[in-house]
Amino acid sequence: MPAPTRVEQFAQELNHWNFSTNADQRELYREYRDLIAADDQSLDRARLQGHFTASALLVDPIRAQVMLVMHPRVKRWLQMGGHIESIDRSFRDAALREAQEESGYAQIEVGEFPVQLDRHDVVCKSPTGEVIHTVHWDVQFLALLDSGQVRQITEEAQTRWWGFEETVPGIDHSVERLIGAARAILE
Image (cartoon, rainbow, N blue to C red; front, side, top):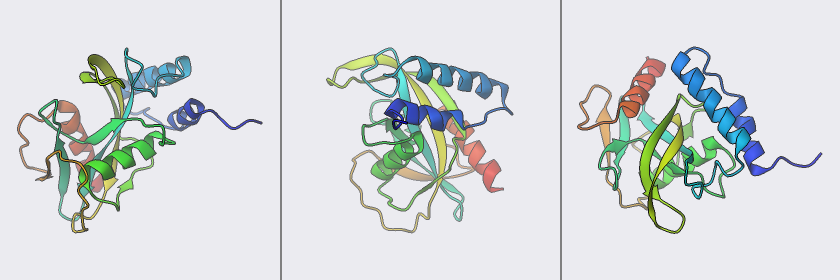
């Protein structure tokens, strides 16, 4: 039996998730499964009508904090995340890579299953560098770490730790839901 293709590998991961307790997420999950089954290019940012992305909300449970990044184009505080790259073997791998690159932390434990899915319109760069309007089909994980570890900063985007109860100016509703999920899981 031949090894699964890259998109089949991602589809197998996606098919093992369960969003049965939330009607909105259950419907979105069905749409995610339909997209990956219907389009072999759905992982590729070159798919201009929309593509999958992966992200992780970094949580320091000891200090009850989350780390957010000021997105340079969107000008909002968001979780770490971005496009699926050719080196990624799963949504979880992509979320971990993005979290490490954007936060500078090496020791990050990404949850096995995503906490939520979030599909949103966005302006991003195509593979040729052209700025386009598209859709990100984001898979959002929680990731635990100890913020006391040494950071190796490799990206220039501003990051900041925020307390669970702290008001984050201009925060996106999706990020608020992620922070709420983190609080609920850690209580």
